[in-house]
Length: 277
View 1 (cartoon, rainbow, N blue to C red):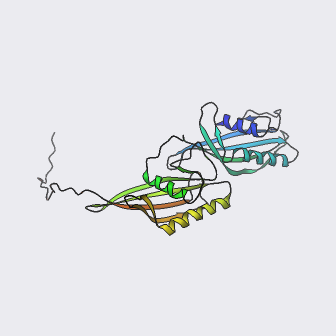
View 2 (cartoon, rainbow, N blue to C red):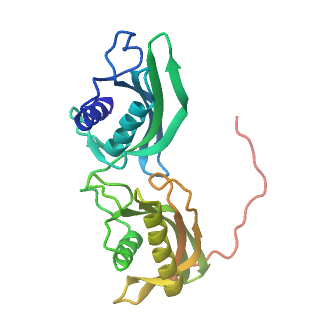
């Protein structure tokens, strides 16, 4: 991961001298350079899998912070929501800019100014991973009637683009309402990814309004089977890559074959337990 980020930064920001791991630079290290600090890994299975947070600390000569601001602007452009591949492992990921870390630093001893920024790294999955959930297939077809942007299912893929949409299943349950009727429920999460907040809100409004108006979406038109919306909740401030902004609970009822075999009427027992040595 660090190698891939290093290559991306050095290729996109020619004025950078080098990208280091912590404890490598010294007072004599040529500036400007950047130090990569990896934080704890988080295998968040509920969301999209492997997640890691990193900080990038940029160092330049102690003249003005304007040069650092330019470097950071270029770094955000080079990494934010871009598809990056590790040249050694072939693993693919994307980064989401989280903001500036702390305050600007003036290091008198090293004659340097420093500023840190933070990113969240999200692993991207292989495009060949097939979806086996028919409810997600229905949401995929339904969403493509609303927008032409790419729609992903289950997790973000290696052909990741922005803007784009992801649908995944968060919870599911089944309960028997009668001898011949089962009620199935699933909670689906919708992620809308874009580097434009207004675009996210516009897409969110379009999808939510369409769902509310239609109330049902087709599951199998030939058999006249539909998914009915039970609840819709939105959180526009939720992380677009790892959490998702729209939560929709669907349900459907289906008939099941009645068991006409023998029915237990009563169970008799001795009513006494004996311990055997």
